Image (cartoon, rainbow, N blue to C red):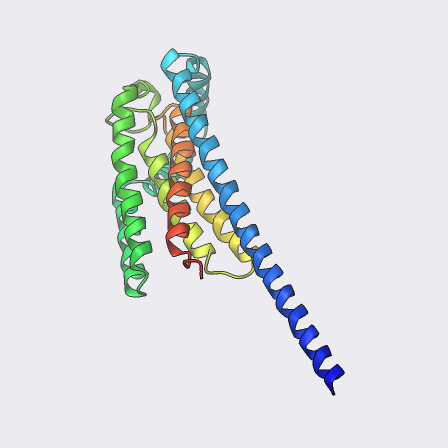
Length: 242
């Protein structure tokens, strides 16, 4: 009997050790993912800074002008394209972004995820403020009216529509993806969010209201901003160590 009990105790000890190892590996894997996201956010921010410096020095002008001319030619050859691009561009408008944010924050509050709701609201609001600060700091003018399909006011770099759509869509996409257990579902949600942000940015160039580098800068800043706040949300949701 003593041998049987000893065997049971050894089996239980081994099982506990295995469970602890799995938990440790799972935690380490989660930490690695967070570090990779943080690294990507830093790289995107660095790309924004480098791109902004190139813009200020005028090194991107030939690239920007070429793409604007191509966009103008595309609209002239395909009149229906402008109408579709205006619809895509509206997805990044202040009204639509505000509506998405209010609905999301309201739902998160309803399901008692108040910290996440506060973080989403703060991320979007502070992001919008920082975009305006960056626009004023760079002071870049928009393309000439002759390039544009519609009239747009304000400064140009980074693109506000592009930046805010990246912040809102990527943040909400990541939050939705985190509720799904299957990897294909998560990837689909994240890809859909990225596609929406992509369409908004492309539409701004095709409509001639932004230089291409305005949009590239908006994607870099918006994605980095969203990742930084999502990492903060993850940190605050973590259970304290026992």
